[in-house]
View 1: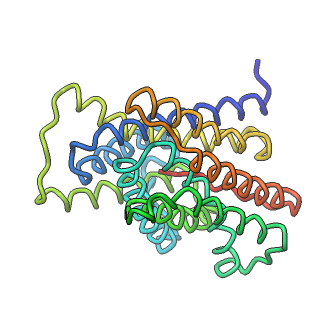
View 2: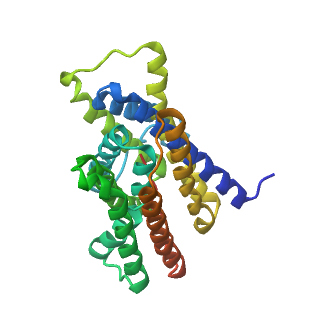
Length: 293
């Protein structure tokens, strides 16, 4: 019988694995229109969450008093999701994952203006270290005017607001409802892209495209379960395993070898986010910038 902390550790590990598999399939699906891939992420995410609605909420599962905040969470979440999908299709897997770790940096900055939180010298130092890491990672792209390096940063900006919105929504809304609304929003947005041309997938591809939504849905659920059962300080560092997976599968499938600059920059970004995280623990605040895709 596993303890609560062990269960939390297991759920976080499974969540990281699920997000990593989703990233791999999104990168593999680059021969399909982006809107079509978004449809599979949203539609099968909706199917997944409909199955886990508690029995006492089946008649009014959609009810909420915070529609406005849900709308903002979905809007910024869609911006982040589209940006990360574009990045995954056009940049090395390890590069995208490395830059995505910078989300806590932007969340720290946003929290000053949106939540009126006071940020001390240690977190400002972490922000500076993180930005240096981003510059080191993206320098090859900037020197060759590779616009795709901007998309992981857009993802971080969108995800940073999403983290704050979810922090506020979670006080009154169940996690499954927050994720369900987001999956519905993805599905609706994707339908507007049909006139731009969708490709009929083969049965084999249909299975893989469907897994994008299923893995995205289950990853968010496992992530929430991890924070439910375990102390945040124990399980959050596990998310950096995603970089190990990205390096391994990027090389195995696409022959991508991360540069020294990518590894150095990602190290600084990880150090930065860990400093921010440890300061939040010290100040007895809970800052968890989860992907929530």
